[in-house]
Length: 131
Image (cartoon, rainbow, N blue to C red; front, side, top):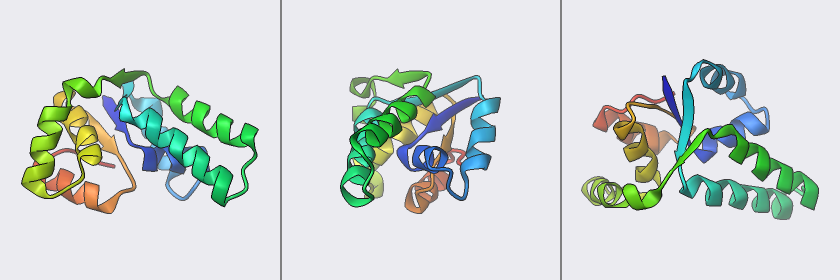
């Protein structure tokens, strides 16, 4: 099983929130955990926000980003995904950055782990499995 991990689910895991155990168990079962390269920018931005808004220290923010990056086994080059992601974004009136995760899941017959309800709705429409 291939898991495509988006940032919302990664933060859930890293900060041990409500669905963290469910996501952890799926990752433990996975043959591989993948994400588009965009994930690196998103997880480091989350670390920055926790530094600014939640009072995380520099070290805590760095560790959050590093731990998030370390969950991923393989990053998929966004240059290979952007055209298809842009098409889906335009066809479905949905942000391209989310569509990168969708295309990553579709091309790899993966299951997308996400907390994003709108993204889950689009995945259902496009017949992409989500958790």
